[in-house]
Structures are given as structure tokens and as C-alpha cells.
Length: 99
Image 1: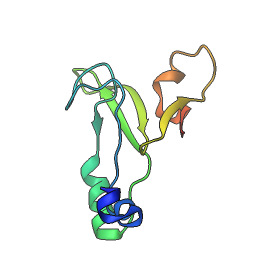
Image 2 (image 1 turned 90 degrees about the horizontal axis):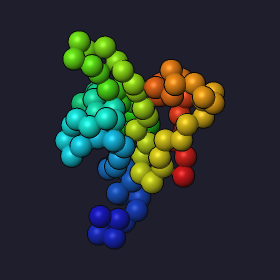
Image 3 (image 1 turned 135 degrees about the vertical axis):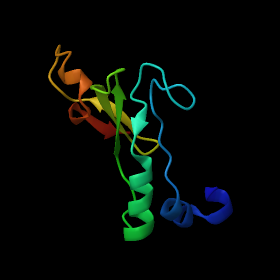
Image 4 (image 1 turned 180 degrees about the vertical axis):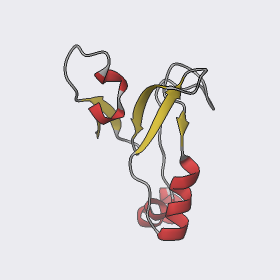
């Protein structure tokens, strides 16, 4: 796409996110639920292009089991929270998008 329309036009109109641990469309052990519609709506109606999004994994009762940041490609989430803390590792706030 960048070759066809140029990098500035591609960056102004597209975003690509990889959701680690998620099956093709949903499921898997990773955070597989994100409010993509609101991000798209804000981009179209308010010209607020999405940056890092947050995805969640919920249990059968709807409780959040874990959350992860969805980073714009080629960035990926790197754990920056406290060492050896299983509870902290389940929170998106303890990750940073990095190259």
C-alpha cells in the first residue's frame, strides 16, 4: 500500500495492529476483545487517529481476566511492570509499546 499511494497517504488512512495470542478472528489465550468501532468513529468524526488500543480477555461471566495494549505495527507490547508479579502481568498498564 505504501508503494502504491505513498507513505504519508498510507499513514494518514490506515493502522495495523497485531493481537498476540489471539486466534484468527477471536479466541485463544490472548486479549481478544477491543473497542475498535469507537476508535474508528473517533478517527472519522473527530480526526483523532488511533494510537495504542487496549484489548481484554474476559471469562464466561464477563469479568476481565487480562488486558494488553494493541500497539501499532511494527511496535509490540513489552512488559515494564514489577518482576515476578503475576497479577501485574495481567494489566495493560504494565506494558509499553516498543520497537
